[in-house]
Image (cartoon, rainbow, N blue to C red):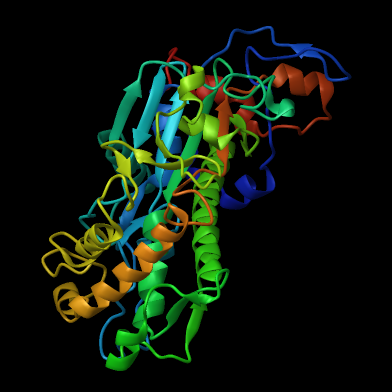
Length: 428
């Protein structure tokens, strides 16, 4: 049923992983590897695309979360934002990415960030059935944004020059994972404050807001300090790692399916997200904010679909913090005892986690508002929505590799892909 996909060894995928760029219908115009494909471009089937989407952002059950924190030694830790387990890891389920996909049939958004699983892990089913369930779930949460391929010209400044001949070309499928740094930063700020740390604007040499009332109450400790630049760098690194994990999952699955492709980052993220809309390059249509103090346009979200926890989607950062807290402690939030989880007694575990106090919400809101007011954006050291890498998938032109490379340039799965996946003219 799965064309041998679920039986493919992990080590073979690791050892056989290569950037195989040349797909059916492509051309390298000159140089020692000059080659023009003798075939027409052939896009991935809907099934092939959905399997790769599931590899990147599929839901696999409940995660185990962060189990312990010293600030509340008698409770389960409160750091986790979502307990949904996925094929790719996220730091405490904070800022969980979504996945955009584009090919000749259109542009799509798959958003599984707030799904609640119905079981810890699919141990009872065979691998084919588990894959089918995962694919069905991403299909159900995939929205078609347009019936056209992403508007991303093969020209500078939208692409680096080495990618112009092949990136987003006819027949290719481009995967674009995007993370929410606003929620990621709020999650790390909440963790730091809960452990008594004063957040410090180390660039300006002053606290982020007025910590004095919170020091007097004992919520914060004057001698414990976390620099904002360090905290925001940690958040950015977490986002980048999560996006790379998603991409690498897709790349490993390419080997098992016998598809060509690669992980790349030589596409202008501002172009892909939509910063050049007024110049006629629509991209994905994200909203951008430009601060009067300068700097590059900041992508804050895709209206109605994937919005950052910052203005203009909220009136101020207090409202953003309230939404963040609701996602954690509100109905169907991470610690709602009415929702299941991975533990033997999930209701008791979740019921035992104390929601944030009003004082804590005030403290977090003040620090977050300071960041936004100081620099006109949140976070202030990098983009609110993070897009750092892409995966492109193609049907491999094996003739190109037979002519220009030594034997073994591709795997048996590539050699037999068409007969296994398209024998009846489809990918089903």
